[in-house]
Image (tube, rainbow, N blue to C red; front, side, top):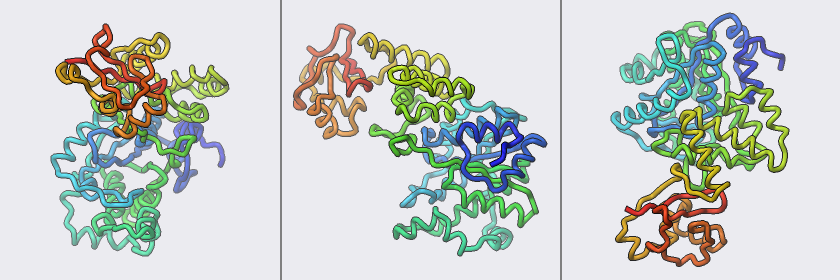
Length: 415
């Protein structure tokens, strides 16, 4: 791969995002010649995105940082169908009201990462053109450009069929509609670039080819590799559930702690991908060894949290962690559950509280945690999984501090 001339592609490659491009030289020339308009699509299946979508969000941020214009395409129309890519079963169909609420929640995420405005980033809903399509005319004008033989060869379809998992005709239409999205964005906003994960390669290529066949447009596709941790786990998933980007679904402290728990082998890669730190500074942090690598993890956690939740929340999370781990305190930012005084006076099972506090995904897991010596109450090891906590366990500050291992903590406050 020759050294690209455009700032965007240099940054894209240097930070580890590059996987495939439909025409790397042509895209580099277009990015060097003027302002690119590029997009990534997001389906509105929940009212927040999670860390699994963060690479795509960062691509749009890099596009804007290097002088180009990003489009956030919300799938208000396609969410009603569901993207089969990477899925073994059909998605639950959502109502129009559900989708609208989800888009509003997702917009809060993007307000942190992008600058929006008439000439800056924009958010567009594909329902604007998909809802009004006339089916017969659409098939006649665009369906003839798609080969079913080729569509069956794409991973998103082929894997489902090989596993003998159902693939509805509704979902099969998804890749046609995604290709049409690209053409509509090219017409309406001068968009020439679609980006996405490697699982979207077939859908992106369809869009590039549709633009060429219908209007002889020069469009480009660019994908990232599947991002996993050094242990092989997918980004955005933990034993406790998804790592959400909106604070009302996951506290800034828990988000900070997720990044603080990064494995040593992932620190440099994640600093490049998920922070704005200069590459020379990241190279320096990568050289840290032993206990010093913790300083790099703290910087990763604080930078990533500041991007998603603001500098004040990031610094508060870092300070809470310092007090919890360095001084044994509780901190006001720890996850907190409330229990009724009457219930606690009668006694509540420790395994139930560990589960309710999110320190274990189930009561069985909480039992195993305690039996393995990983559960603590107010800093003291809990020896008996059948233990019952009462008002006598409430510390002077008015809470019970639960700990799972050395890094996960929660408070139980009495109402």
